[in-house]
Image (cartoon, rainbow, N blue to C red):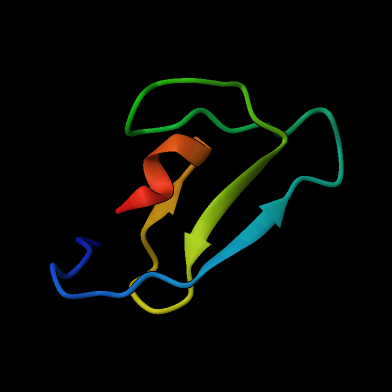
Length: 54
C-alpha cells in the first residue's frame, strides 16, 4: 500500500519475539533488524530509523 503524501506519520515499533524472524529495510536495504517501524495512520513500514524523518 502506498503512503499518502499528506500523512503526518505516527510510528509504532513492531518487534520480533525470536531471532529467527528479522526484517530488512525496503527503503535503504539495511538490516537485518529485530524490529520495524509502522505508521499507525498510513501503514508505511520502515526498518531504518534514519528514514523516519519524513
